[in-house]
Length: 117
Image 1 (cartoon, rainbow, N blue to C red):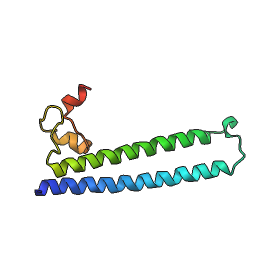
Image 2 (image 1 turned 90 degrees about the vertical axis):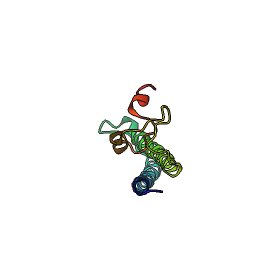
Image 3 (image 1 turned 45 degrees about the horizontal axis):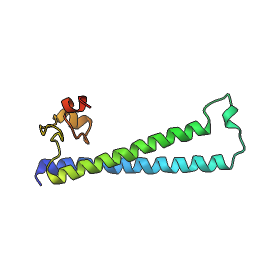
Image 4 (image 1 turned 135 degrees about the vertical axis):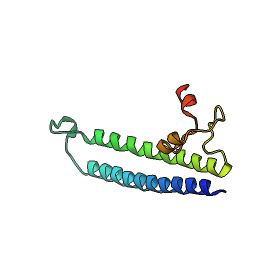
């Protein structure tokens, strides 16, 4: 593995560690919210003062799902680095521009192919 691939791998691993920590914190928050709603008799569905527990639960769940999807994408990107195919479009086999990879390190397609979905 060359120096550039090692640097890319290190960056992806750093991002994966950050996302793993974020997912763990979100899971803890969601668990706390479930526990709080179980021990409460509040009728939050009819509370005019703000969001409901159900809304907060749905919002946390959505953000947690997104973090889990990001982990999967980072794992695929790491596999592509190891296979030597990172930075190559899966559809047209052309290089993925560095700017796209900087913005979205787990990108598997170039901008043109991504636009054809």
